[in-house]
Image (tube, rainbow, N blue to C red; front, side, top):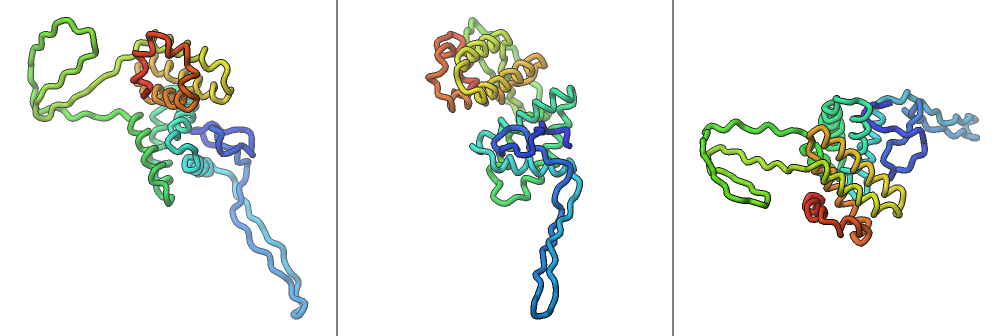
Length: 254
């Protein structure tokens, strides 16, 4: 099969499901058309002939590209990519870089070859860029400045106006705060559709895993925020009423 994707055992899995459909052991390679017989010439016809080829990992690559293009809504393809990324991370611990390489150097070129795939390609590249650490240029000028700050009770950001200076802002997430918010979320979604609950659980579980690895969980929090918007904010009475909501609200994109 293909190790980069979660492949279902169902050969008739609908396209809107997150796993890939099982393609079986063989695929149709070519069909030679049938030929009709002629009573006038006294010739007999011949049936069509189908040639098969063994299923390869490339067949699943093509299926994933097709699923990306057909995903609805298209702006939610992050959820599809994250699903398979999480599956690979769980089955190939410490090898997430291989998944990102496969996406960038195999899937992305295939996606770019398709017509009318500009939006899908842009969203796919944005996801890749968020997952790939960016190398910052070394500043040519170093300024050793001392900044005295009084009592500050709000997040503060400083930028020095220097040539070639690089501004980096780090969002610090406290694991306990995130877990508190997620526990409230779980209570709020207890009575909604199981598929939607599973989507929430996937994002929350992966976010907690990323936190333990000191990784940024911004993509997961934004995905959770999008899911909340789709369900309707009125559903999340426990979370909205809690003080923690004001902290996590901006990170959810709300």
